[in-house]
Image 1 (cartoon, rainbow, N blue to C red):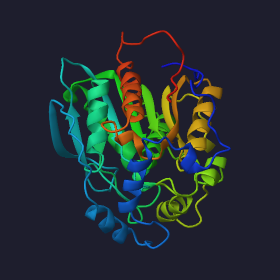
Image 2: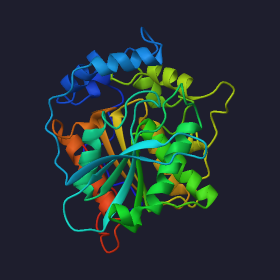
Image 3: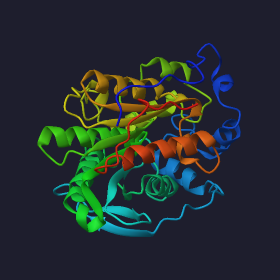
Length: 344
């Protein structure tokens, strides 16, 4: 895991252009297709149950299934007094021990699950040569903060205790997630540091939500027309955050935490994403706190692109970068060379 960001081969994000002008041409039809079938959150759709019905009725993308060695569904213990957690365990080809990744799916803490993110989990399993434990944490508004974050921490503790049974190396346990899942992965890692729990070897965060205030420049410049909207982010936060909760709570907005003593991180961001700036700011703050960080930034990509590796070259590159960060947690697998990663 490296500790600086290499120069972007395409230069800085062209922020003087409109969002649709900044979006890569090959990404536009995919983004528009996803938007067409996604619920209009905070607009015509304000009920979580209705949003889930709309999403469930959307046609499935005709993408090939990434083959892995084995996929198993099971239940693991949740936090004390809480229900068991469904998990889906993906095992890679090849001889172990392997890295073990605890993966938290995105969906604004309200939507999605292990089925919607099956392709993403398979991609991480393949690219990282890793066992992936994909977690079906409780969703808001039925389960509000901090319950989903506590579910994520419980899954981390279970994976650490059972890493040998899973075929993993104890030194190569990784906490990972995308979007709201990236938020939960960071929160669970903070909990592990604060509580003396099993601190992972690395955290891998794909366009993570790290600042629920929603006041960054990217929230304003990417507010509409790019799949994830600023209105939707506000609606998600209303579902997840109990009234009166301080948005600066470190397990809610990890960017507000003291990040000293956190494990190395790999952070993926997209230039046409409301969450872009807070993801990059989180990486910068980790680095300022002495934590090794590598970043992969894709100026022409939108929120949600990471799961489209079979259709978008940038997504395939991003998944390979995540796989490299995961694989390098194995003893003897760290590589030298250029610091950081930057995508195009």
